Image (cartoon, rainbow, N blue to C red; front, side, top):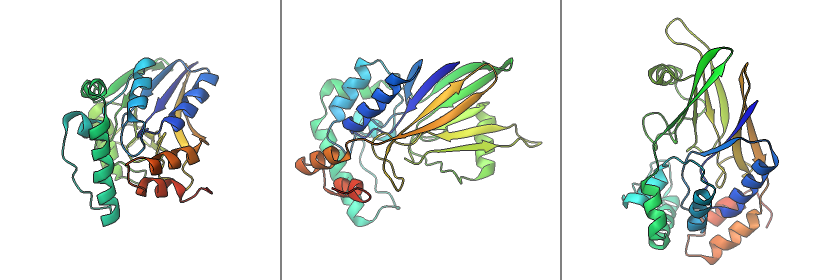
Amino acid sequence: MKNIAIISDIHGNLPALKVVLEDIKQRNIDQIYCLGDLVDFAPWHNEVIELIKALEIPCLMGNHDERIAFDHEVTPLPKHNPEERAARVNGINYTKQTIKPENKAFLKTLPERFLLHFTISGKETKVLLVHGSTRSNDEYIYENHNLEDVQSMLAQEKADIIIMGHTHKPYVRHIEATAESPAGTLINSGSVGRSREENPLATYLILHVSDENITPEIVKLQYPINEVISAIEESEIPDFYAQFLKKNVSV
């Protein structure tokens, strides 16, 4: 049995990351991968990057990492209301102004994907790790994403399993085989630092890999969310992101 932990979307939330890493430490985990988005919206982007570097965790380039690394402009998202659009610009600009040069340089080196190979029941099984989708680190693939497009992605990549983050909403979606496309699985690992679920827990994925199968497990953990709320309020990050965390928390 081999156990692989996959974390994603930390977004500067060091307390949540520490809780997840401590949980991983208590389990029989052989390898950790990160799907990206280390920065923005909580004030510990430098500390998060430095911890990922210190632990030598292979990490992909999320869309937020790319924006900070290359100073891309912030493009408004139609799904956001005016308040969130303004907060997003200010939150990202805070990261741009405070990130250390060596950490910005590190973000520039991050790859777009990892491809893992396993032998399951005597057959080679390919597991593709991306941030957003197989096409872009900024594309949202939700659980109800168009079936034909999902099948096309699996077939085009010749992948048995595709694992992604970006939406901050974890799921496991099994795709049955058809005459045109083989079976496959889509998995979203959720978000360590900024869950968009009703109860915003620190969330990550474990793949339990045996000779017979690969079994995904979504892990959800409490973390000191009040510490994060206070740190945001005491920083120049817009209070919008503290309010986001307060929605389902008694403070």
